[in-house]
Image (cartoon, rainbow, N blue to C red; front, top):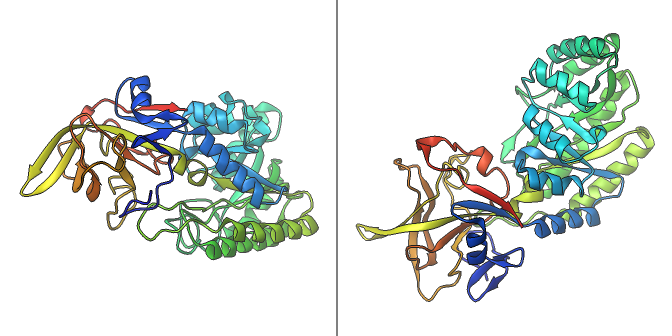
Length: 408
């Protein structure tokens, strides 16, 4: 079924009710116990990982960026399927280690790491992607106290950016990483302080649906790493070129051409095998692995009509799903794909807006979208909700109850 006004919907439907993990949505809602909730389908995650394995060369290491969705059960599932985990805080480090991922395959990136977080990272034996000379000084002291050198890579702020990306993480002035022109000096600093250098992390952007732009950024990242490696105090053992792979959300969005990216990675892998033979090429993905595997579910509390327009007031809202409200980076608000989960097609359809219970005009999940005509008690579903959902939202806003999460 191809619903208008948003990206195509490919979830199974039985008796006009959405299914997730082989379970009818109405049954799943009873099993969870209350709404609102997020639900993630592990089988859809596995399909996405298998697809990447099919297109990418075997030499490429696939890492999951926990910040996209840090639900512990989901991270545990990921730990058994991917080659590594990337964390952005001490809390995520705990989640990664609890999930059973080998510390050798965990890396830590992010500006403003605290001394306590860096001490924990060194004690765990994970790779620290350093982002400043300050971190180098702290790691030297920690390494001295621990009696073993910290494992470090340099997160590089390149001179280029990922064109057409939703969020640009590199190029120009940025709080992330070390400006590329300053990296040779920092490499000498690492050498003099006796830290265990292992490689580079070059992440230029995210949420990109243009394969040509992604391939261009990957080529530039490899070329930059080859240039910087000439100043490295030890052979490069890891080159993390980030991800940037996007998923379709809005009208006109087309799925990414994964085959083109895979072909590009084959060429880059062969080049690295020749010029940096000890380096493992890492692609770090978050949204692309989990975004399309999750849904957000809330329940209609009341139907209201105001001056001819229908409003479905629900028990969910922007405090659970900031991104769907349009307040998480959108310049012009667009609707996430949404439907009435227990009336997917419905006997009648109507233009309706879905709003939450918060006392603010920003609390809009769906604005004037064609939906099945819904009644009190029906279940509203927001698709493409597996990434940057619950933990990226202001859960304490107006003190409403939190949403639950389930992995099926």
